[in-house]
Length: 327
Image (cartoon, rainbow, N blue to C red):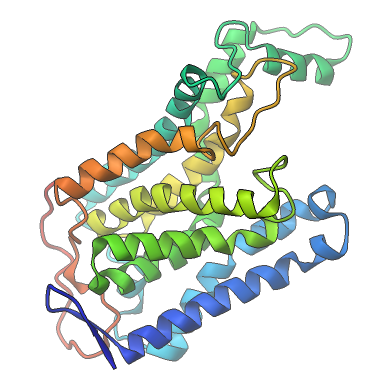
């Protein structure tokens, strides 16, 4: 069986089987890893951090199983986007761009949510952050002005991207490293949508426990998670396809995770933040990434730079991944 596309490329039955094995394995492993939370105290479990980190590794495990045991392509690191690390200037440029864009998407969602009336903001006094610090400090005085603390918190986000790189790579090796390029013969939009939906649904073991959307029913939280993953995943996918490497997408993902809690810095004390509506997790936060993805699509920016990212084992020559890129 083959799946024909307008461009003449194909997804063979072998490709479809590989995608099915990868998806089933990544989802099954995620549920398996999360079972202690379901059998125990849920998100309040003392094991939550360890379980979440282990769950982030499951897409990488699934991708490695498929690459080494199912497909067995000749250039395995190329198939996963791990190598080659060149052209160096382009790779570094996309890596920096990924960090900056991810942080910017998270932060710009906050004033937009405030303007739309769904994010209770305090951009002047940082009252929610001040309240948290006061609770932590007790009777002690905070030695640094609150504004300076906010600036420090924002300034360390790029560094946090490198600290978070390994767990983020655990996800990106699967979603954008292997899965997205494998789906590209279906066309750019279908590939972005399918990979984004799979990524979003993969979060179910935690989202259904209240992760990210603590005040929403499970079905609504999971639906919102899928919507966010489709749009943000498309941005990460652009970095993967244009750079020919998984590393910029992994750094973008790491920066995104690091910046996720910044909405607490600018919230108003005593107000509940509905993450189905506000922050990058909610619909108001999707406006900018949606606009960015539409612009990138209109400019043809999702055309893969590396033509050799396919996992087909047949080619005997070196990949053409060292070609020049334009953006």
